Image 1 (spheres, rainbow, N blue to C red):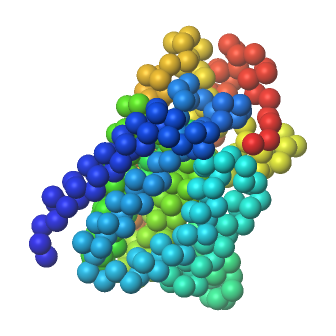
Image 2 (image 1 turned 45 degrees about the horizontal axis):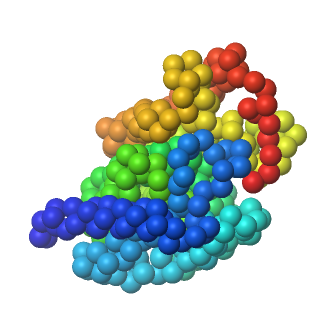
Length: 365
């Protein structure tokens, strides 16, 4: 195969330029009121006026350069077509902020269902006897796969709110998965992951440096479904040595955020679909600003985002180091979940010492 290194740099630059164009047009009020991140969202912690158009440069780069890089384009075209329902609904939310959470959730379920049935992403084995037994029933396997893809898409949306976090963890996850793709002989999956990763890196650079453009719901859904679909394809269609739990460990931070955010809201007798500012990254930023930097500036947002990407990438690095072997990753999954709960509890307690209780009122999106 030819060395396509230069063509991976090109989509990065393409996305970077397109992001700058969007920011420039937004500064000239080209988009009017559309796409501007709402100031009154309780989960909003970015202090700059930002726009939720980040998915467009990524998608444009992926489509253009995917046409040049991929030899067999049909599986990836099929996958992107399956993503369209949730992408379109997510983008409508990005530009209007008026799409209900129920409609967005329905759209992600529809896209996930299409990916499972049409794009061939069905998880049939999970290295645990009870799960393998359940997955031997096709309907159970399909249902679990749909739920899993829906959860991953929303998990990436949960952590999109602090500079560089969602896109940064998306990049590291795709790099880790690309390693397993190439070692499993799945060259086209490797190319696709590196292409999406390179395109996302261009966005990440602008996002963390300026804070003026965000992934939005559409971008988070896109990255989450790319990672989920690729993960299932690698575990099911590769050499068989990569455990499904390896994929779960790679995405353990966003997955933990999703699971425990739902549990926390239910415990607080709130709807699990209501937004709040009690996410792990929100507490990290609030704690930093309260104890170290009183000003709610862009630097602190990007600093915490970069730090969390750095820390959140260790599970992916460990997964690659142990080659995704079940006997190693399963204990790491348990350790990471316990560590998340421990750190969250300590962080919440420490943060509350210097914050007014009104900072933690839960409102609807």
